Length: 360
Image (cartoon, rainbow, N blue to C red; front, top):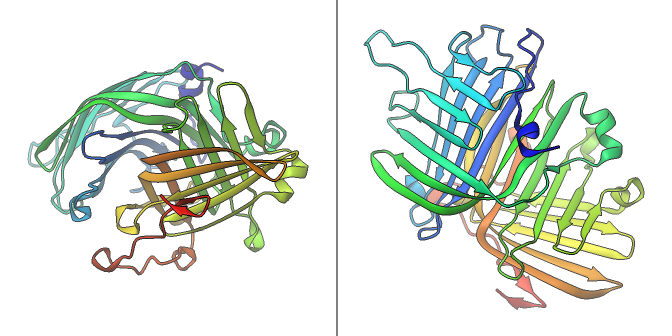
C-alpha cells in the first residue's frame, strides 16, 4: 500500500454510519510548540448537528500552557466534498447571516490549508494554516497486526501513511503568526463504522540516538477492563513486531494523565516504551462516535519518549526523544480518565524518564 492509497477517501458517499479522520501533527523546533490538525467525517449524510464534516485545530504552547488552543469548525451535509478514492478534501460552508463566510478548509495530497474563525463556540480563539509536508521513504504503517485486521478492519482501520515527515508553512493562532520550517511530525488516516470505547496510543519517529527508528504502540481497551497491547519498533536493519497472538497475551500497558507505558515481547526480546508529558501540556477534545456516544480524548504532540530493547535479559539498545513524541488517551467514561480533575494551574509534572537508574 502506497501513502496515497492509504490516505484515499474510504467513505462510499452512502448513508450508513461511518467516520473518517485525517490528521497531521507537527512540532516547531525553536519553541517546542505542538500542532494537531484534523479533518473528519462523521455520518456525513445524517443531517444531525454533530454530523457532517469538521475541521479540528489544536495548539500546545510549551512555555505558557494557558495559551494552548483547542477549537473546531463543523460543516453540515452539502458543505463539503470528499470524492471516494481521492486524497482531496474540501470543507466550505456558505456565508452566514452576517455575510461572513466560514473559512474554507482544503486537504490535497501533502498540502492543507484552512482556518477557524473566532466565535462564541471557539471562546474567541481563531486559527489558520497553510502547510505542506515532505516525508521520508518509509512504508505505510498499520496499527493492528495482520491476523487481527481480518476482523478489526470490518469495524475500524488504522493507518499511518507518513510515519515521519517534515512540515513547512505558516500557522496563525489568535492573530500570532508562527512559521514552520522543517517541523517534525507524522500523518495518519483512520476510518470505519465504530471506535473502541477506550484506548491508549503513542508514536515517535524522531530519536536522538537513531534517526531511523520509529516506535508505535496501541492498547485498545476491551470489556471487563482488559487491554490488547501492540508494540512495533522499526530500526534500520530490522523490525520488532510484538503482536503475535502468543506474544500479545504477555504484552502489557498502563497509563495515567501525562504518562504511558507499553511493554511488548518478541521471542526473547522485550521492548519497553515509556512516554511522559506534563498534564497541562495535553489537549482535550470531545469525540462523537457513529453511534453518537460521546467520549473524551487527551492528546500530546510534545511528549518525551524512552525506549529500551532488552535482549535475553540484558539492555541492548536505548532510544530517547525529547518533546517530539505523540501520545493519546481516550475514554468513553470521563471517570475512567485518571486525574482529569487536575487544574492547569495546579497540575504536577509526572516523574522524569530514567535510563539505567539515572534521571534524564
